[in-house]
Structure formats: structure tokens, C-alpha cells
Length: 151
Ligand code: SME
Image (cartoon, rainbow, N blue to C red; front, side, top):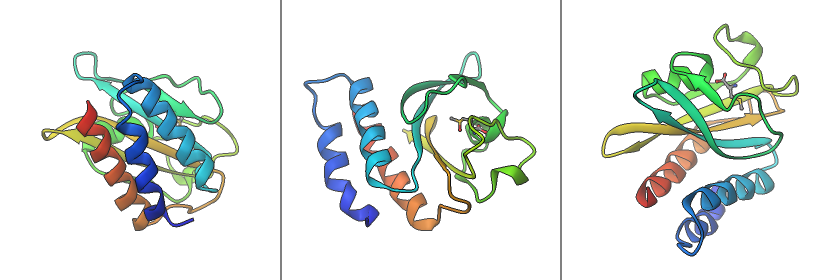
């Protein structure tokens, strides 16, 4: 499956204003998790800049206990502070990592910006080691840009 081929349906889901934004985000998570074999968990966290915490807003895959993550903690919390993509080829090599499942081997977190503000992120876990490359980064940046348009 070429990631490029998923763009039309992602755009279609996000433009469906007959359902809530949360429902659209969940639908995007489910679509990506279904279509990309190595996307085993897909979620959107959004930041509360007052409390400096991230909050899980939509996801597909196994439910996680980590519905709230302080800025700076784990891969997600580090991206909330750094504003940079974080590709983790091997989660076991990370010190500042929050484990959701023993099955997860690699992870990618891409910040989501609107008007230059880091509002949150898309977080993807894979059961495959070193699953993510630059094509995933460019694609997920594009997904986040589309989400930013409807926020
Ligand atoms: N592994 C993440 C926590 C979120 S779960 O992957 C769903 C982290 O280290 O921030």
C-alpha cells in the first residue's frame, strides 16, 4: 500500500462535516490502522498549554492507559516541547519512553501545528522494529496539515 494512495480518503473523511471533529479523527485513525500493515496503533493527542499536558482525543488499536501525558515525558511529551518529528526505530533503546504494550517495537510522533502553534500530535506505534521512514514522516505531516484545517 502506497501512503500517497490514502490521501484521497483521509481528505474525504476530514471534510465530512455531518459528524463531529472527534468522530472524524477517530475515523482517520481507524482508516490508517486498517490500511497500513505496520501501523498497529494510531492516535491523536492534543495539548493543554495551561496544564502542560497532552490528552488522547482519538485512537484506533488497543486501548491505552496513557490518556494524559505531561509535557517532557515519553516520546509524545518530548515532541510537545521540541516541536520536532520523533522517529524511534527501537523503543527499547529509549530512556524517556512510556510503554503502552510489550508488542510495540517502534514509534513515530509528528507534531500538529496550526498558525505556528504546536497543538498536539499524531502518534503511531508499530509491532515491527524500524518500521517508519521519511515517507511516513512526509505523509503524516500532510495528515496533520489536513486536520489543522478543520480545527
Ligand atoms: N509511547 C508513547 C506513549 C503513548 S503510547 O504509545 C499510546 C510515549 O513514549 O510517549
